[in-house]
Length: 266
Image (tube, rainbow, N blue to C red; front, side):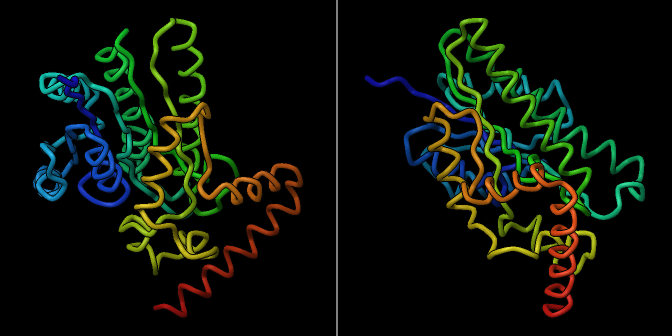
């Protein structure tokens, strides 16, 4: 009889998280879908089927991650944990309210760290895999998204360093960071008229959540620690680091292009 395994996906009421949860169920895991909107999590789980179940979770509640890990491990060996929950704040960073600043740090960074720690404590020597959803913005300047980019850079740095700690400790746990370009989720489309988000609308057609989820599952089985989706965009953003002055000018032009597209679509 094969071992029953479970997977946790945070912020999976919709978007990328929902698609990752769906694909994890297809490969045989019972998936615990969490979301700050408990009803959305339960609806998503019912849609996924395959024994998936949903619960409300505020990832800013650090102790709550341990409770979620306990719920998952009660139904089978916890094999996969996906830290997907995140928020986007756009505009000039100095105009951010104290509450907004606290929220993006608590959710995007502390939530990812606490989720990873809860997963590791539960998986232990049995091993498993952790996927942290970062962003292509972790690799280059993103005017208008300074706070978001900073949190995703932290997620990427945390992931790569954490893998080194796990290797040193001899724990058979893989931790990976996925860095997608703009994805056509509600988090993005809801900013279609927000000037601070102009850079999000300056490039190619947004990625589909299904394709990003597929790349995430492939990364979990890979020896790579992080991956940019699509790969060619990773090469492009690194060019900004190679020629910072020209890169910032190019970003300014792209931001203007995004603003024009926003006005055209309004």
